[in-house]
Amino acid sequence: MAETVTPTPRTAPGSTRRERTGWYFYDWAMSAFSTTVLTVFLGPFLTSVAKLAAGCDLGADDCTGYVYPLGITVAAGSYFPYLVSASVFLTVFVLPVVGAIADRSAHKKRLLAVAAFVGAGATIGMVFVTGDRYLLGGALFMVANIAFGAGVVVYNSFLPQLGGPDDRDGISSRGWALGYLGGGLLLALNLVVVMMFSRDGDGQRTLDLARASIVSAGVWWALFTLVPLRWLRERPTAEATAAHGGSVLVDGFRQLGRTLRQIRAYPLTLFFLLAFLVYNDGIQTVIALASQYGTEELKLEQGTLIVTILLVQFLAFGGALLLGALAKRIGAWKTVLLSLVLWTGVILAAFWLPAEAPVPFMILGAMIGLVLGGSQALSRSLFSQLIPEGKEGEYYGFYEISDKGTSWLGPLAFGLVFQLTNSYRVGLVSLLIFFVVGFALLAAVPIRRAIVAAGNTPPRVL
Image 1 (cartoon, one colour):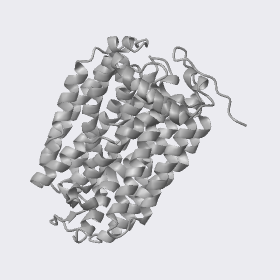
Image 2 (cartoon, one colour; image 1 turned 180 degrees about the vertical axis):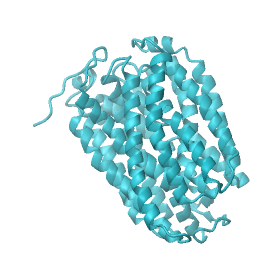
Image 3 (cartoon, one colour; image 1 turned 30 degrees about the vertical axis):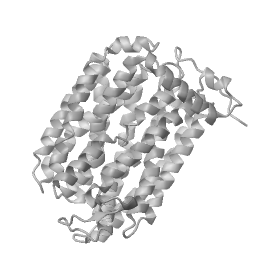
Image 4 (cartoon, helix red, strand yellow; image 1 turned 120 degrees about the horizontal axis):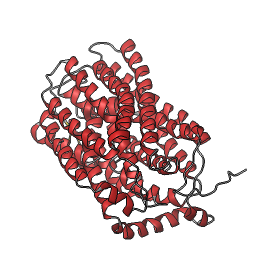
């Protein structure tokens, strides 16, 4: 029997603890991809596969070979950053459409299921990326990354319906915190496997273990997605209920067109989104390329990288809750601004890290962990205050273009600078501009006026 759904007005959100817990658990599920795949294993894994295709030997640090996807000359060390940028180019077109469809659908959970299982399936498909199959690995990554972003759009669109203006910072922070805990747990399991079975000087064994870890993230993602699909309630808007029986896909495209024409009526929301796209581009580039920086520039062992990222995960769990508590006192807007100052310090510290020195790298990881979860969770909840009612999916579609590893300017700048200078350190410096400009743009947003202009009630503290 089909589930009965009723529209829930924005002005009177209500949710049970079971429903909110189900929502949190999608962060637990998908964070395995964000952490194990994007942050730790995939960058070094695909870089190694690309180097094999370029004629380099495994473990050859001084090899600067080239691969030729679609006839384009690409340095093997730049292949993964370029893939991230290419996947985002596609998400620019895909994610807003997914959001529009979600707003017009009475069954958003089905959309969440499709996105999650397509992404998880592509991740599991990495089991076939052996030898020099860098093109297959790149194609699977692009499918998984786009599906990942689509799932997050639908997932985020539930947030405004789970709590009122004063509750969303806490709900968003708890979701991020549980996500970091889940991602950290799987990473810990992979850490045990890598430490037990890796052999010094055996590059092929390292590559096989990385592949197995990536596949495990796909299995984790698919398995724990069953929890939100079971516990979340359908909460369609009045417009979605009225559209029931028509073509959701066609209506979604039409609605997206109307939104693109009407979005100019909310210039302050657009201004906030611009600020977010800039500073979050820097954050996501650090997350996506940290492992590659550690292996290629700092010459650190894979075990050191995994321990550091594991440290980041568990500290980010506490950091998300800590900054969430701080936001209750001084407001989410001021807390995010403070986090951007700390991110600038992280980039400066990373530039001066010595090579082959695990302890300074781990200390820097601890600094990242304390600001990572909170800056992202509070940005998400702050944006929820700026969305006109009934447009949650569409606006989170635009938001997600630069979220959860789908940034493009940062990786593109990093990859270009490396190709020109053959230095990851110089590439890292290029990321400073994202945090400095992002801070300036966010500081210029009259946030309370922006919330009122979107037709929403501001929280007591901003």
